[in-house]
View (spheres, rainbow, N blue to C red):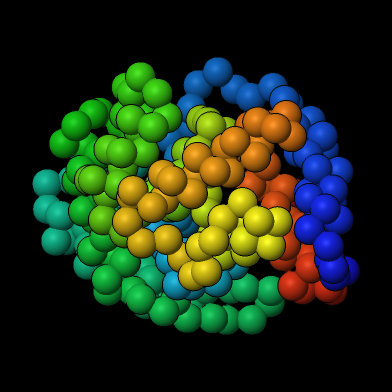
Length: 237
């Protein structure tokens, strides 16, 4: 798949938006699952500079150990236990792989755990404590080590809490540049003010198309990945 003209790229993205909307509209449980929330937050922190598949497998190993589901008195001991898990190879597509940053990410996860439990009785209680998604993201960026606006937005979206925030990864930034709604040339966004400015540009584009920005960037991610990786199946994972 290759898009020579911007309007073809936009049309490809718009074409799969109804399928993603149908998936989003599938009824969800009324209560937030604590284990699933910690898995999502762990994965968002672990996936920085690491392939998603490896981060996901590492998050699975941490979830299986149930280290993040209750308060602990010793943050340093929690970090050591998390590092021990991340030091072990995980299984990915039938082969053992090693996580890249076991020490630093273990410390970030332990600090995130301490930040959550210093404010609320659980992660599910915390995310329901905010008046809107932007406020929740702001708190996460400020208090969760390793969570910039992209990771915080990803956590809130993947947990099914909101579709009003954009996940501005390299695929979405490339799309914005190619269709002419951004002159941002880097593959990452540095600073919250720049992130908010680019997010607003994408939100206006999403409004014109008729979808939430968090749904549109999901469609963009699928199409742009398929364009860069022609053998990849277009799915909605």
